[in-house]
Length: 416
Image (tube, rainbow, N blue to C red; front, side):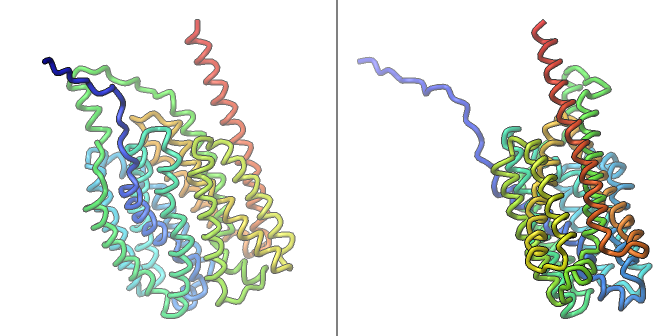
């Protein structure tokens, strides 16, 4: 009797979606973004104790962002051969150290130096983390993966910044910085233990050359698209942070919110942003261009309504929440568009430039808003935002049209 052994049907077995690794990355993002944005909710307390103006405290956000802009690309180049996993651990420890220095700062100048050090760590962090999720999942799952990872940033606005604001108002502004220092160490341990390792793209390219693989072209054709994404995100962030850096005085002066209610409104804004993030990951993840168009349009409508009806507490508050939900779509979908645009071998470098562009927007936005305050008042900030959203919408439309034209030309060339 002959036994026939049937071969199993051939099938491509896809690795399970890396939920645990992405959630660990989101935890690290939460810590880094909270550390960056703590001053926005504590402008009055910090300015009163340090004897400087609220605009000068707002400049701490600018200094942080400028440190990211100036150092992220060079630091990414210097560390390009280091293991990505270990680099995230080290950078989180640097975030912790800068937060300790901020917590014990005896003067404004010392605090400014601590913020610069934190910005350097933050810039390198985003250069690595921004591309990490792209290494963990196939291209079709990028939208969901980026939404989960950047969800840590949204959670920072939902929970981190409001909680830091409440704690700082109750126990002093130094306490949130100390808490962030401790939690950043905990996050680094979690990363070390739970985050899956990914191959270093530079080392992989060196191995390919060693085995005789052809050297890639010096100029990558995806670079122009990456540049357009970076310019667009910079313009959006200038407008956003021109007002968000000074959101506490805006809410007090224009919406007549009591100082004790600022934390609750920031919590509402962040919770609405979480809804936008879910839409980004599960509705627009595979159609980032459409999601970005919706996000920019609805953000503009919400900000306009908030500005025009600031005297009506109910309407202005609803518009404020809608702004949070709409803006929640934009950063993750810009990240998805970047990862779709950039060739895999330049993703880390592209993310370094994306992080720099993002923080150019933060730095210039905080500076721009601070310049508008003395002459035009906080009521001018939403209108500046609207003008820049209009510019960003035009850039996005141009980028989408250019990408479509490039695809058609490529298809036409291939068919010849």
